[in-house]
Length: 453
Image 1 (cartoon, rainbow, N blue to C red):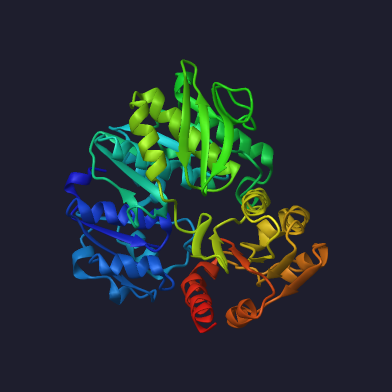
Image 2: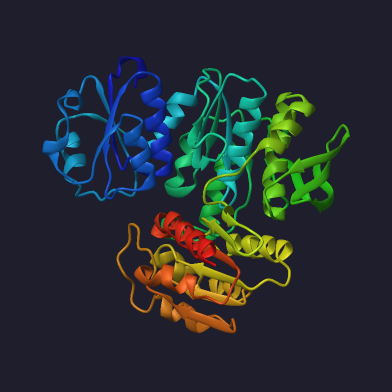
């Protein structure tokens, strides 16, 4: 596929976080861009504001004339779209070039120096920090990200032609379509077992990804990842170490030991040791590439975070509201670690929306254990995404296994009233489903309640 010959790009599933970054990219380089998604979201609203035409009904008639020439139109499809999708089948039947998101990313980045960030947790934050470091350091970079970076309010940083940063997604083995020059793996906890079947099969794919980096000095991993490469650790023995961690006026302050030197007093705002690990991975990659230490430190200090990754939505002395995308037990553990470290003695309510029936089934006991750490827990119904219901897999079954003193089910349409009447002054919403679409309404309701006091 020659992108230079493409005039129009049509996305099926344009509202996906990775798909939307590609849509922004093609719009930025002058292509016509349009697409379909199942439901309107904040992301699709932002794309429409950027001048991209989007519709929400699977209807061939809504495909514009500019996207009906197979010789000049590229169709990009997400794996989550069902095979019976009418528009997808129209493009198949008329011999259009159809590519998955990862294939297109591979084509775009193949002739660049490509940094790839993989892992079952932390890849969005790590790749966002890395993209921010490289952009702020003046590199000719474009970063394709799986989250909206607060500094830029977009998931596409820069418009460089020679250096790229990509979030390497293990789902559907997509990351094997990439051509990385430098890479890291943040974690390899079991996930997406509906795709891989077993964790062992998942680990084979991660090994295949790591093997794409022939020079292991350019491959980085946390201690939990059992692959050849340079190690990065928080409070542990590694090639790159975060040491002397302390909290000062809401900032994390720590030192970094590299293979060559000790760098002192690195300032970073994102809470939790998992985020220090993410920052350390990004630091190690930029440092190895040759970015100056003072530029990396300045970028780490200025990084404001990623939307829905421990995002403060309300932060007053009276009330705190945090929103997080966590959808795996290990990620929930990380949220708990950060909240418990920052808000000792405060009453915390965690509201969790499980994501996928298969993931809830596969990690039912682990979810229960992670959520039981919170004093108060509320569960929404499982968000199905691409799946149909499974017998015996419900939020009620999960709730029975949770041992927290205060636990309940709550319907999404009663969520705001439930929060406003809760006996808690730290609220945390957790999950990768459509709970994210409730965040702005929850924030507004809490702020109105605070004003009325």
